[in-house]
Every structure is written in structure tokens, then in C-alpha cells.
Image 1 (spheres, one colour):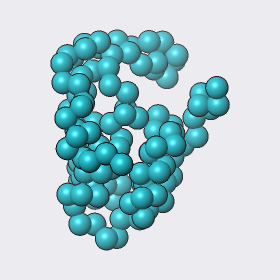
Image 2 (cartoon, helix red, strand yellow):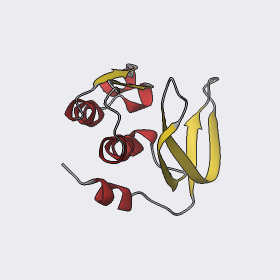
Image 3 (tube, one colour):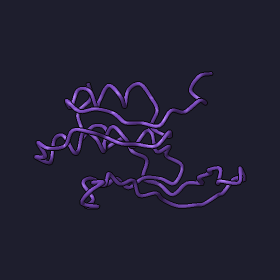
Image 4 (tube, helix red, strand yellow):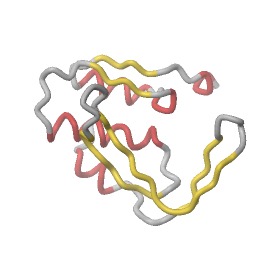
Length: 113
């Protein structure tokens, strides 16, 4: 299990090209950076943030964000982590379980390959 600061130090920080499919199935490109946020569903407060190169997959930002919530905040009422299908990876489920919480993550059929 890796420490939070080690994980955060490995996040790429140089501007890069990123690409993602939009709702019409067309690629959308950008150059620069991305901001990754963990937001409270009820309060809409930003609980953790991470700044990265534009090409970093959102799933790779999840564990540093989750560990930041666990290590830096005292939120005893936090019981669930709700994420979209871009976070449907076993290590993310494992981290949420280690935090003593429940994962509500949309299923990603692309992970069946």
C-alpha cells in the first residue's frame, strides 16, 4: 500500500495532449492540464483536488484523491463513494473497502476484455 505523498509526487505535471470521446462518440482533444476533484454529493464542497497533465486518466487520479480524503479529513459520517464508469477498476474498489466505506461505481463493460 503506497503512501499518499508518494502517489501525489508521481502525478505528471507537464502540459500534455488529452483525448476523450464525447456523447456523440467523437474524439475531443485538448492540450494542457486537468483538475481532478472529489466533491461531497450533498454539500458540494471540494473534499480533495489534484492537478495533473491533460492526458492523465481519471481512474489513475482516484486513489490519491481517496487517500487524501482518508488521511487529511475527519468525516466519520462518510460511508459511500459514488463514481462514474471511468473508475470501475479493482484497485479503486479495494481502496474504498480499506477506508471502511462502500463503493457505488457504474459498471464499465470495456473492462471485460
